[in-house]
Amino acid sequence: MNFLQVIPEPPEPLPKPNTDDDVISLCVAHNLQRLRSKRHLSLDALARVCGVSRAMLAQIESGRSVPSIKVLCKIAKGLKVSVAAFLEDRAFEGVEVLPAQQSKRLVSADGAFISRALFPYDTARQSEFYEIRLRALGEEVSKGHGPGIQENLVVAQGVLEVSVNDERYLLSTGDSILFYADQPHRYRNPADSEAVAFLVITYPERLD
Image (cartoon, rainbow, N blue to C red; front, top):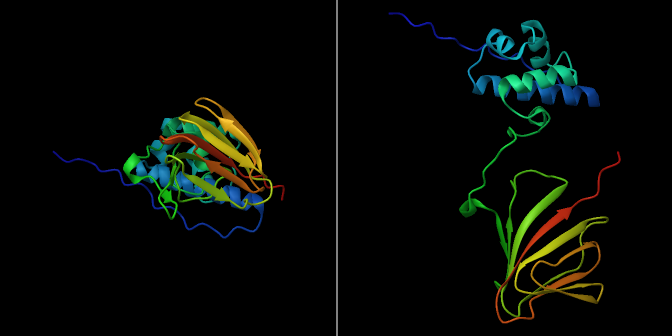
């Protein structure tokens, strides 16, 4: 018995972007190529799955056409991914598991302060999520970050003293604090047991 193997069409070379619209269309094109190839789908097969014509898919994948939101939703549903997966500048389909042992860790020189990234550390983003641990009587001092950066922290275990411009705030388990982190600030553990907290760092939105 002979089996017919479906080989996806090789993608066309993408043109270089000249405008913001070109950047978006090429990002969508690149991700459509990647997702289709990963699933071993031909353009005809993808057209049947998502209800978008083969001709339209070919135009989108070659960067010659920017799909409407309605069309992009159809394609995303057919490929079983988030619409946002087409706008990412890296290979991300909407779900990513981060094994604890592979997390990026930053440790202070004296080992008292440990920060563990709870997000993929390989690309820039507007917000970052960390687990921080501060050993008994330890402290971590920062001169301040870039303009407009905010830190939002919640204590998960123990107590933590947060100082912002020499104003001190003592937080117990469950307490949280939000402040602009472009000011000098300090974390100090006044207790004789380890403190654990979760921290979200938010960068200001670009206006250009």
